[in-house]
Length: 184
Length: 279
Image (cartoon, rainbow over all chains, first blue to last red; front, top):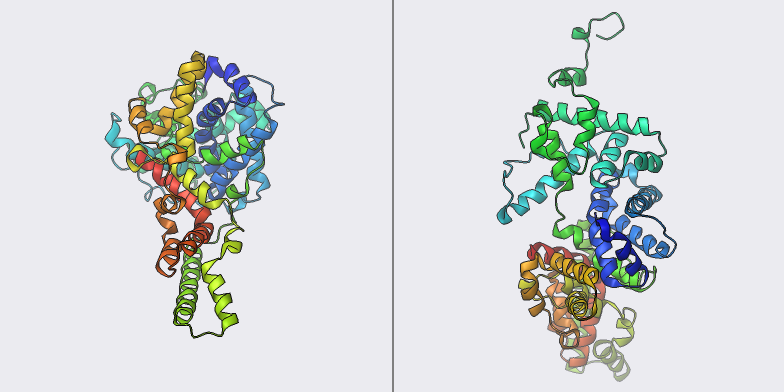
């Protein structure tokens, strides 16, 4: 999240500042990719690139604050993923045993960055094992940083349904992790 | 055994049983878990692993997640149209692709070798000799079909390239340049953005100086052939160009067609490798 500077960054990007655009991109692209890796794992990078193409095209018309901005990005990402028509290609995720996170670092330091990335990778795959709506809601809330109302708008569901899906997903995760005896 | 009159304990429900292992968790607790400020350490015991998973989802980006910037920047520069270079052909399965690439390289190698051997021996009729000579010596028309890949492969491989591997791209140069420009002329916001962009590429604010010191000026960058060579995946094309052609002209144009074939591949891999090294 960019925070207070967002408006000036957006204005600068709209004015053609590559620095500002780089800043916007760097802030949001990892989150977009992680979300896409849950809903369109095989084409996440390509869809993300298409999202930015569309963002660039629509930048001049975009109005709103950072929350609106994030919602806009994820809305485009979701539409593009659906357009690709490849969500069916969503592969069944590898079983938990295979994806064991191993010994988790307690205090992340430079030497453990690789492990940290593995953990993120593993977490994304774990979320992808949830029913689609639950997985999507959790990704949009946690990784996308969207408010429940924004998630509801984006998914075309009621805020209540979104909230219930999130709770179910998290409870299910808790159960799966407890059953697997995973200690992170 | 399922049904309304069957006791819960007799129900065949895996989920039910596993849920029974976990104490009931209230909705507000789950909501707070998803807040941006949530920390695993604050999570109650049964939720601690879940909080850890969510923290891993929010973890700082890794290099690969920041590798696609050149594509986005190109879109930004071209106002939302993708330059041809960045349109990736639909991917074939990796093994098939590798096989085809190997076969293509082999075919070219065989053809070039055969033609050069015969040609240099002067054993062909004059007309054929001329055609063959033009084919080997001046495949410029062919390489013109891919005017962009060589320079762009060089620039896209570079910026993601870490300081340690000699970043040679215009984007890396641009980041350093933008920062210097912001320091001289920009306001605080511009300076902050430029520094953070640069730090992300360099792998930390403390590495910025070393990173920029290793970035050559684009005008002084290595020749395309060499720069493309950084992306080791274009090696087959390069090998063909160098090992079977004798004339300098042929060398450069073969290099062009070689990187044309491996261009898309080079972009992707160059970025990925570069950033892994940058951390």
